[in-house]
Image 1 (tube, helix red, strand yellow):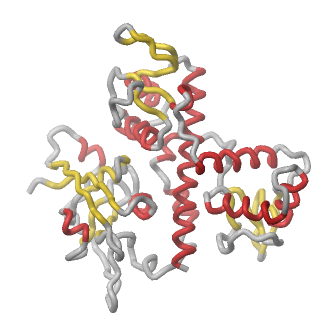
Image 2: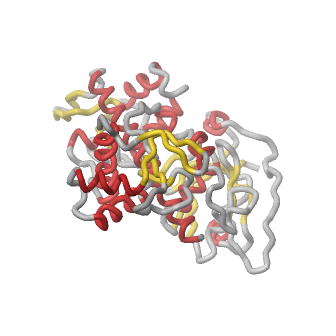
Image 3: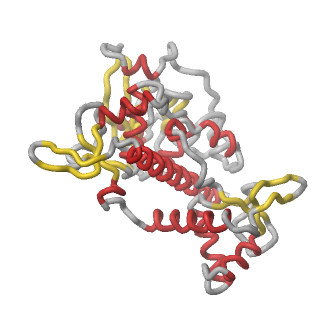
Length: 358
């Protein structure tokens, strides 16, 4: 069960990365159509196919892709963290709301076409082929009394792959489909089974043709609701975000009430003169985890710290608000998304926090 849980978490993280790539590409095409991306001259040098960050933030707010400039910057930083955009000279790792030039990596050929991206593009190609097929195997089907849109039996997908030259053998087809499942592109309709060459029903997790709103990149509540509690492990049975609280033999699951003296909004935290100080902490997880628990729907905060844990040693304390995890802005994310980000990331977690001034 623990291995299955880990695989599913990785699949969810890869699925989110795929959603970011789609949203980034849709934005890139819209900006080209709107002439915000063009060749620009700066210090007697021409930078092709770039945009001015301040102009882009203006555009995002005016087109209601973001409610305010702070959120717009956070959205673009999310694309930057996922290698969708970058500073034209790669001198900055943070996007600034200023007259600075940035560019989509797809426009200058620096987009990292690694294994994950290639698998994602393979899945997208298969989806487009299947959805456009006049006699598509993607149909409304029923499994255990529940109807599922655009679903397909595993064995029919293998047949289709062979007929269309996408696989040379059934074994190769099964390997491809299991890879697609591991990367969050297809899944069993009830999320109960790995891929099998059988009558079990599967679906594409991603609708590649749906237009994304950029705010979806930071607000993942709909996806979280769909995920529910499909995976249950001893860690998942903790009452709140359990990713970081270390498990000890004979320990009881803690119960929580909010430790905050009062609730804060993201805008209050970012307001000039707010009574908070930023700190960057490096938490090196051990075999039991990282040793802290976060809660909150945005911003999320540290609810508990396990005494003697890596988090405690790094200086993590209750009532600290979490701003970044491994360079990625998480201020507008809820605790579920922050949990997944830490769980699927490296063992060393670099966390930027905002600590109340006492």
